[in-house]
Image (tube, rainbow, N blue to C red; front, side, top):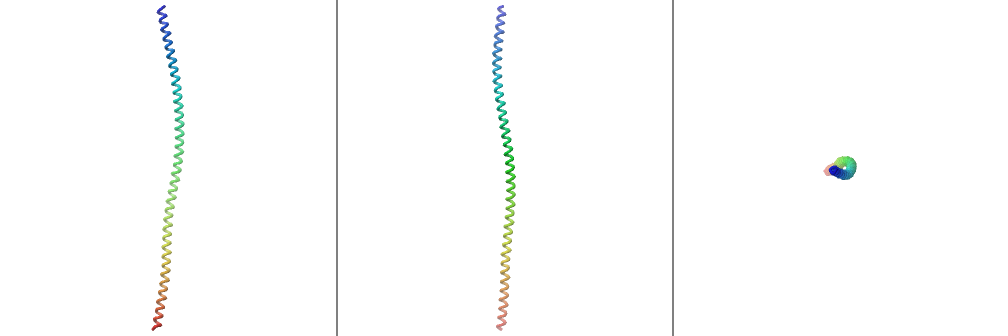
Length: 130
């Protein structure tokens, strides 16, 4: 009976130790579940942040594309205006040359006419002088 009591006490102690271990494991499991839940919440928050950043990035890309298109349009307009400016400058220069040439041409015609008149006058005077 003594041996049986010893075995029974040993079994009770083993059972008590097992219960203590089970409680410790249960406590650790609860702690790990909480940590896991917190990590999952953190992951969800990060996923939301990544989604927001990605969305903002897409908006910025779209805005950049619009700005680039507008810039290209304005560069084209500027180049067009530069060409127009060159053409107008050339036309102004040509018109000025024509007008100057025309003015001097008229002066030449008038001078020739005056020279003819003077030659005719001189001839008349020479004839008269004879």
